[in-house]
Amino acid sequence: MSTILQNPAVIASLIAAAVSIAGLVAVWFNRVIAERYSVHFAAFASGFVLSAALLHLAPEGLEESHDGALFLLGGYVALYVLRSIGKGANGGEQDIGAGLAALAAIGFHSFLDGVVYSISFSAGLETGLYSSAGLIIHEFAESVILFVLLRAAGFGGVLSFVLALVGASLTTPLGAIFSVAAIRELAVERLGELLSIAAGALIYVGATHLSAHMGGESGRRTMFTFLAGIAVAVLATGVHHAGH
Image (cartoon, rainbow, N blue to C red; front, side, top):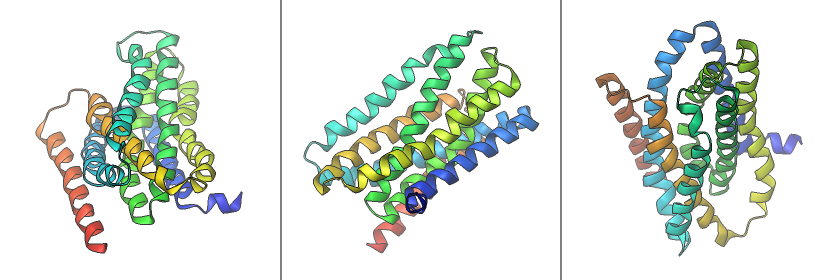
């Protein structure tokens, strides 16, 4: 067990969980401020994750797999279907079912984040650090959003905190721990397919999932935060290629 906990993917997932918990603590003590800044966290993460997928993961996945494009599309569609399951939670319905739908969608998405960490780090330390950075950043907004959705659905404050802790925080390291052993036994030729799936999933997270969480915010500060995320990703890509 100690060996698994020392795995870079698991460490990254634990950092992500800590960032997610920080978001919950922030929203618990000051809901107004946390919600306001969660938009900018989502904007930065959106720009970074989208750029990381398009500039780094997708090219590597397509290079390693002849069917990489199909797997990339599959990763995107899988996240789309998953998010559609919880669509009713975004419709303003004040009911328990809507909250549970949000919990299921975000919880499974966070679990898949942990799997993405394992896939990314299996391709190399630099690839893992690069692709996980944006995911770690967006965990803050993810936990805040789930807490707010649960509260809007009628759950109490303490119960919303606990459910958001499980759904948005603990599921990520669980996904990493669950998948790290399987990824280790993976045949090399399958890595490109998984990288393509991860790229498709990240494209959905950056272009659709996080954009929706931004709540239609289109102010200049949000735009600049989004562009800053892209700029950091482009810089990281240049450093990565220079290293190779």
